Amino acid sequence: MASLTAATALLTVLGTVPADADGAWQKVGGDARSGVSGLAYEGRAGDGAGVHALVVHDNKRSGQQRLSRITHREGADRISPVTWDGAEPVDLEAIEAIPGMPGEYLALAGRGIVYRLKVTGSTATVVDYSPLPAIGEGDDFESFALVAQNGKLAALWADRGAGADRPATLYAAPLTFAPWGQPQFGTLTRRAYRAAYPADDGTRHISDISVTNSGRIIASSAADAGDDGPFDSAVSDAGRVAVSAAGRVRVVLAASPTVLGTFPRYKIEGVECLPGSADALLGTDDENLGGYVRTMPFCGA
Image (cartoon, rainbow, N blue to C red; front, side):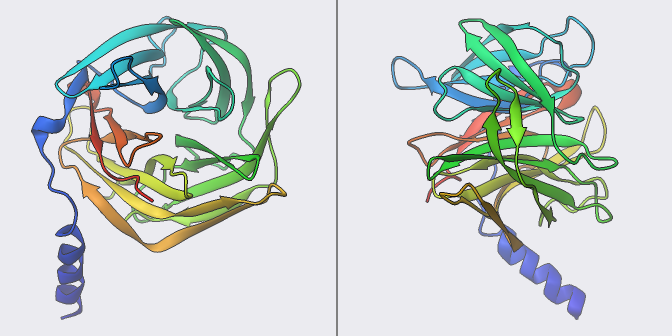
């Protein structure tokens, strides 16, 4: 009876989320080297009908593409390479625009190295780089977000976790920059997080995060059965973050995250709330099957 009740409750939650539509996904990569491991909003297209975004790729060999630019609009996406100028990263998994610093971004590699970039045209120049603080044993990072409130800046990132035995660990800390450009992190906050969906043994409880203007934390989760799939993923309302005028960061995660949408057959690794919109731009890294993007209305107040 208890199992039946739990199953009924799960069906009730999942029954409220938007139905997935394959036709809404638009292909932006055709192989394992061109999937979307992370997204950062750059700006609106000149005609107002699309958005420009930077995309990181989790390539590991020297000379492989690390960064691309997409122009996303309904019916057609344009993809162009961005040259990486500086220390070459291994396994980039996330990227985020730095609030108040036009053309500047932070990109995160899976083992915890943060690269500060200045993007001019089709070139991204490394300004400096730094390890994340307090990297734990076995931590594998796929997410990074920045939040600006009360004139202060904070960073959020997460070890992705793995199945029932390893929840994700969400980290948060105040963020400043040294005069020479290096990212510097303040007092650290940690929170454990378990995704409500998917529930596979290898579930990555957090595969990316984004923060709305009001401080909602929007998180994706994903299951990966191998380079050819099958994949599964979801986007959830994971909790809230606030930054005080003194720079203190407060994170409250939901005990039961609200699933906003489920996406069978896709592995979402990029979530970006679009400024001035309720939409989130979603990106997938479907390994040998390539990468896809679409928007969903997940980022309202």
